[in-house]
Amino acid sequence: MKNDGKLTLNRRKLLKSAGSLSLGTVVGAGMVTSLTANACDNKQQKTNYDYDAIVVGGGFAGVTAARDLQKSGYKTLVLEARNRLGGRTFTSEFAGHKIELGGSLVHWLQPEVWTEIQRYGLELMEVPLMAADKTFIKTADGKVIEAQTDDMIGILEAFNEFMQESITSWNRPYDASYTKAAIDKRDHLSVADRLNEMKLNPIQRAGLDSFLGILAAGETKDASFNEMLRIWALSNWNYPSFAGAIGQYKIKEGTKALLDAIVKDGDFEVRMSTHVKRIESKKDHAVITLQDGTSITAGAVVSALPSNVIGDIEFIPALNKGKSAIFKERNSGTNGQMFNAEIKGDIGNVSGVAASTDQLPYFGVYKQTSEHTIVNGFLTNNKLDYMDDEAIQDALREFLPGVEVISSVAYDWVNDPYSQGAYGTYKPNWIKKYSDDVYKPEGRVHFAGTDFSKGWRGFISGAIGSGTIAAQATIKMLA
Image (cartoon, rainbow, N blue to C red):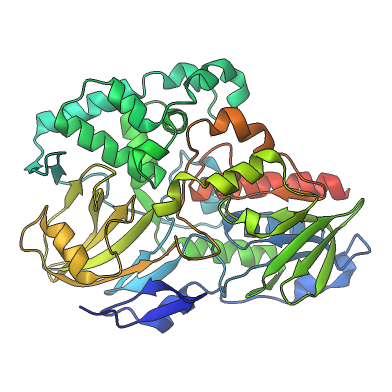
């Protein structure tokens, strides 16, 4: 099947749409429905600059920071390069269902996002991604087997063994300094290094390599073992909580419902399709220069950009060593992707598992009807052309012979210049080498974003939490 819809940005194909998904639906779904002008009222302004605070980046970290700043009485502007808000989240409709093209998974164990869900009275829906009735596992020799109860128990036992050091090395998962020696001791290890230390049967190895690669949005050789221990600690050190926290719930009306609620509540000003070229810190204010050469001044700035993008903007003074390094090295999500595929008929609540080096490391069922099944596929490398229905169908048929892909949709986060990758986690040695620098302000600039979270890094909750912290630090700076 050929792609029947494209959205281009910087000459790169970013969005593939097919079947019942129209280009207009996708673009509109990511847009904020209303931006009020009340935020421009100079009566609120507390500094002598164009704005009290400017937030660069309109993902969840950015809009949270802007809301908190504006509601604290500071005239705040959000600058967003895309024509929509939401960052690496993107709610749309496909084959008659509300779907997500980016981040979406939430849980009450993720405190920051759960607080916001409760604040705005949003409902959750349960998805079966981590609770399939049948799981098909592709082992390293290319064979696909239907996992039996003993196989799944074996994978669970291997997970517990893999994570057993977590409770001592990450006794306080939001505070790496508390057990710094234990964390530093393990920080050179990748997930693959730790797997290679274990005595695993082929099914256990495929299961762990798949799930941990998906969690990192990359191959396990590029993901930090420490990061997995930290997320296990955030999940209360047990598999049921871990599985629930990373793959069981989404917001019923979509992540956009939460985004819109924060924006409406914040009542701040937004300029979209606005490209920042330079952020310069002065003694008591900052100057932002846009790509068109115009400048805007503010008492302080919150940078809410992904770590893979941050270095594309010139900072004066230059970014510190740690932030510069993570920009150059890039997080584990540089090849992370996902797709939604419409399958003919009801194929049942099934999932497929393969190593993170496989072209299709994981898929699970999102929605089932008698006419069709919507499957979410998660990718950790660039081996599968997720913009091609036939390629997706061929990959799925390795697990489910004869399945027919009617249509599919994916957003190319890797080639989007404003994300340059999906969600991601730290690489080996990053915590020891860079974490002290990552969270430091730079002149009049504080940093937010899920990549800069000390908690649920790679999740919406981490983005929201970092936005809250950056806003509070900015308020102190402006006071």
